[in-house]
Image (cartoon, rainbow, N blue to C red; front, top):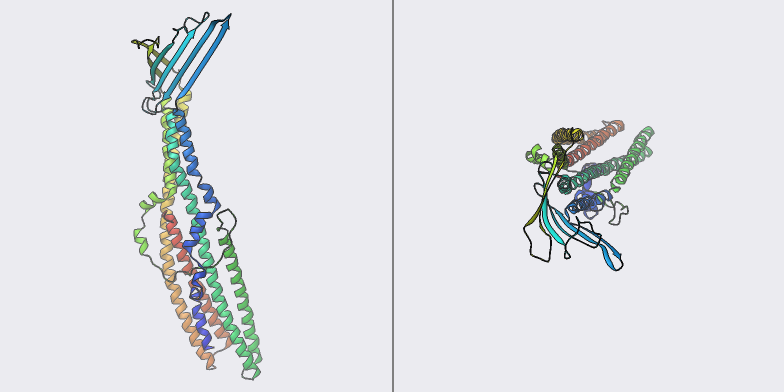
Length: 455
């Protein structure tokens, strides 16, 4: 029996019996998840969509060509021969100016005198710009500014989904590691009682002990076998929960192979000294996403305020009434005014936009509060898990001493099977609590890295 007791001690370090080449480390596991998980592969299209939205917004500043041509013939003579062409280029700058080049030619017997030109036609080069509404922004420029925010917003959204996925995967991984370690403990104590049952049966046949002792030890065998089967079921379920995060590069489910890495043997809280809420604000994608939403709301609010001013557009152009000749100092000036009398629609839109800004500011405060709470909770979890590991290690050490002492008394005939079985149960329970503490510490590190945005 003495030769079997070290097996129980080895249950504290089940990873020592694992084949190092068959271990799936947490780092390798998370790398596989990040590279192949369908949800992240789907989210990876967000930057491409953002770039497409930018191109779409830039397209509203593309040069626009309009050409109209009308021709009518009567008895071989031009009745109407009119060509109008214009090239307009809006600019992304203050005042939102638009450059416009025009050409027109109107000849024929029935051409409108206002559109009649010389045979070579006339051309003009001008500019139009708003004087009140649209000086600082307009629909085109506002859409482009918002589109420019989309890549950062897409990156923040991707990182949110990535961090959440890796956090869940890492927690499930340590659940699996804890369950596998618990199987090793249950298997070890089960083998111990099997050996004791064999020895007790042999002693009962030789008359050294009563037959009832055999029944008692077999009862303990059945109980520990049930605990072993329960531990195996929990480990198998944990493995299934971990396997759902593994996929192939072609999007097919990938089976889980190998064993988890051992649970951390000791706690290290030195990393807590570098944790800061201010740094978490910079790292957490939730804060960055809220910042993008705030900027978007302010852009819409700025556009809504522009509509509170009347639309006044000034247009000027240099003209040549005959392009076959040199450019003459002719010019054209125009003024367009469009002003709703009550501005009720514009004022309502401005109010809605301002409310949206306030809501975005409040949402930012809520998100920052939750980030600070996540960091605080993670720090507490790390510290308490560290203390729990120390307490569990002390409990295991004391329980081990009690088992050793009780075994000596049993071999000297001063103890009973019931007592030594209870001592081993208490020791096994202490080992399981130690495993739980070690797993909690590992999980607390996962939560800490997630809360600080560094997972």
